[in-house]
Image (cartoon, rainbow, N blue to C red; front, side, top):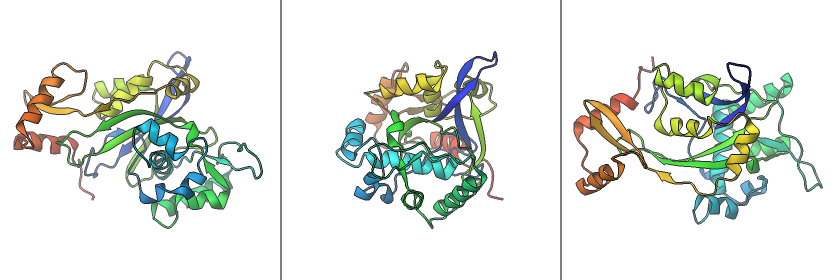
Length: 293
């Protein structure tokens, strides 16, 4: 979740979230509005990566996620995917011989914006890695400005399943977010309350994890408040939704919802068999909404 300060309809202070619309031909959740994100890649791991990160060691990050090792790679992947999909790079200028690093990267200068746009294309094409950019521009990744706030596992009926960690950070003021025109086709900055209202009216499509994460920050009026809250999150519950069909419609239950425990027990008792009709409904809901043409 990439956030910034904004204004509500009355001119009061509020928080806005960057959301990207997935390509209508995507194999999963086509057309839905999502946060920037993706998979952890092999190059997100290792001592060379850790040397270019600030404020978190792999041991610290792993402890936060509850894994034995490799936790820092999740932070690096989040920042890399944010740059790939939205063009925003959360990094600081390194100060040689100083224990403190400089300001966050600012791309408001047209020449700098052009250079980093070229870098972004190279990263998306596989010709360059995020660490290559850091070395070339003498940057370090500001992983200490990024907080872990949510953990969801995709329902078993989804065409593709993901074990997803959600993070939050404030967008650098000197950068502009823009979709990549490949995986994503639109960019909006929207207040969480407005996004939820638009979803309830059927104007946009949001996934249950997206809705839950938006609700977690809709009560805040500034990025400072959100980041103060996020920095204090010490326990994140893993959420595995259960998908059912009720009156011909998909019903998604998550921990805490009425009937979740019973549905989970029934699903475990039934083994891995899935009702074909339910699987078809899931494919219709989450699959492509248009051909690549």
